[in-house]
Length: 314
Image (tube, rainbow, N blue to C red; front, side):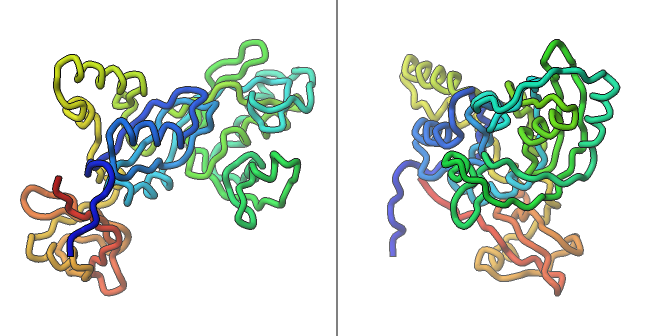
C-alpha cells in the first residue's frame, strides 16, 4: 500500500528564527513553513508578540523531537519599567497602579538575590497554560481570574546589567516553565513600586548558538537572490537548517550496527554495549552515525525506541 502523498516537500531540520517584535510564534511558524514548502512544521515554545529572539522551528521529522526543546533551559535579556504595574505584566497591558521608585541599589540587589536558585512561581493569568481546557489568557481577557498552583522553577543566573531612571535591565538564565513577566512583576512588588516588561529578547534555547539565528528578512533576501540567479530557493534556504537530532544532542549517543538498528526500527528493544544504565539516549546507525531516533533504557537495561525517524525519499 502506497503512502499518501503529503502537501509540501520532505525537508527535515531545525531553523533558529530570530523572531521580530509584533509577530506571534504561530504566524512565524506558518510563514517559515510556506517559505520552505515543508509538509510539517512546529515550534518549540511560544514567544510573546512583544518578545524577540531565538525561536527554534522544527521542520518535517524534526517535529518529533521538539518536546525536548520545550523542556530545555532558556536565556533572556529583559528591561523592566519600574514604578508602573500593568494587568499583563508587560507594555501591552493597561496600567493598574503607579507608585514612586524609592528603592536603593542595595534593596534592588537583595530583591534580585531572592529570585536566584530554586524557587516557586505562580504563572501569570496571561500565560498559555490551561485551566479546564481553556488557556489562562482567554479567561484573563474576559476579566476572569482562576486558581493557579505555584510551580517549581530554577533561575541558574540572574545578572544585573544596568539601572537608569525607571529602567532596570537584567539577563536571566532559567529552567523551563519560567515566566519572565512574572519575575519582573514580582520584583516590582518586592520593591514596593510595581514593574512591567518593556523589552524581552530570548538569547538562547538549550545550547543552540545565537550566531545561527536568521531573521525573516534574511529568508526573503535569500529567496530573492535565488530568483535572480535562476536557482531553486531551497539551495540557499536548506543549508540554514540544523540537523534534526540537534534537538536532543544532550542525550548520550548509542551507535548501533545496521543489523541491530533494524530491530529498533521495527519497534523492538535491543541490548547495546556502552549504553548508559538509565535515561534517554540518541540512537545512531552504522559508521556514518546516521540518526534514527531516541530511545530510553528500560528496566532490563535494553534500549527501547521512543521516537523514530521515518525515512522519506523525495
